[in-house]
Image (cartoon, rainbow, N blue to C red):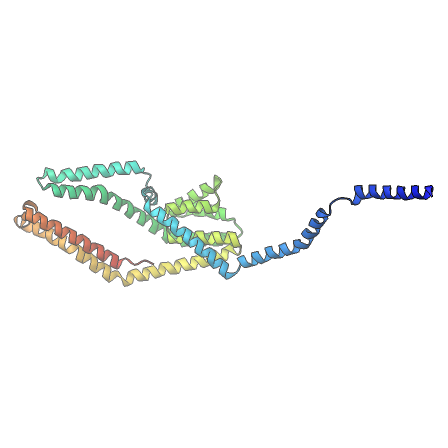
Length: 325
């Protein structure tokens, strides 16, 4: 019996040691591995479904709407800032320098009527016009003219990118060609874009900075196409070719709108310039007849009312003939 009992104890001891060193661990790790093995294909399927859902037309429309909203916020921000307006006009003038120039013009315009013996109210009005209105109008005029030139040549730049991509050139090299061959302001703006990419900016960041300097709808459309292509993929040359067609059709529509509204624009210009022109002609022919408006207090009050009413009329006519497209 003792040998049999010793054999049983030895078997139990060997089995216990084997269970401790080989099979005695917690089965949680194996369960986790089995769960991961079972869940792997499901996760892959979920990722595939998510990617497929991102490529649906509805998802692309949402991305386009999001890009448009972001661009509109950036455009509103760019229009408000005076520093941004100076950049849009292509001026290297600082904001402080601009205000100094405006102040000097306002003081000169205020003192000039006083030197000729006119009423102080005329001097105050001239100071406000030349100190606050005229400089900002000049900056806005230069900015609009510059953006108009930029928009006029932007479709050609998109065509250069399309032909370059089809011939195998990278997009960065296409930007360099545009910067080198295009006229101002398109060429210098793309040169700044290339320089921004060279210092480490992403294409989206460089386009955002370019949009701050040149907030045009054409550049906004171009940025949206580039951003969507980077997120969803696809044929960039085909997308930009479609954009070029849209830009040229939009430009043609704008020219048609200008042609159809040219009569209203000419009528508004004639109506707005007729009272000042008649006043100048009467002042040249009979100066004493018009002098009462400047020397008599009642005439000055009437002149102030007339100028105010003319300003409102010109403003209303400008809103009537300003077509947004």
